[in-house]
Length: 88
Length: 88
Length: 88
Image (tube, rainbow over all chains, first blue to last red; front, side, top):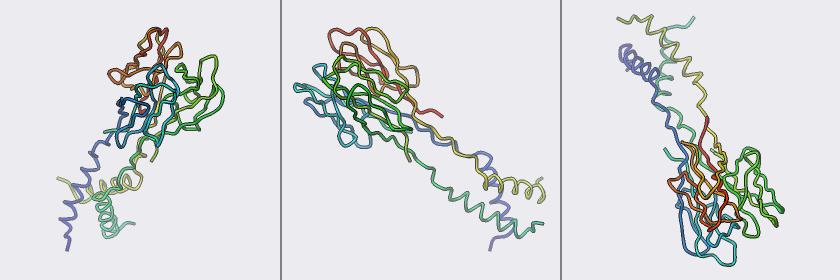
């Protein structure tokens, strides 16, 4: 059975926790580039493609499955996926 | 008038809430591609363009109003806007 | 020495704070485009490059140091860095 004292003790702890709440976890945007030969480049798990770059000056690409860059020009030697996520 | 009991009861509820705070809502980065014919492609409301892709291998583009991709080459058959936002 | 009254007073304040927690700070994705002549364009401090655009229709670029767009084609008159961050 809780006594007044034990509840008072818990109360004081709770009040101090309230007065000094843990600082909220702040996240930031974090990105990396993944380069692969050929027409496809995949982002690591948990990351998403925000843009793609292609060899041979090609600016035509699309993103498959939200994380795979696919360069669309007929001749492509490499593909880069620009991959981002939120990280603590 | 609050009695000691009612305050004690509220205290215990508050303490248990403090001990088991609701898990903070975590957001993640979410993106989608919007394709349109011609030189312009617009992101849906609330989303922002992080990159653009253009037809005819064109790699020259700019972003208008933070959410409209505009492909700058003389001959453009389609434009893709890569659109992102934070989502729960 | 804390009296029961002072603890009770603090308790009530704490309970009301618990019942009306400050609304959590929500962040959103914010981006901007930085244009520079030549082959390099740098994002402002704290921002990260999510994609790049180049003059002369060039779609081949990479990102250096996570915030510098570098256009790779032999003839480049301008470079645009698409820069993003999380902002309140």
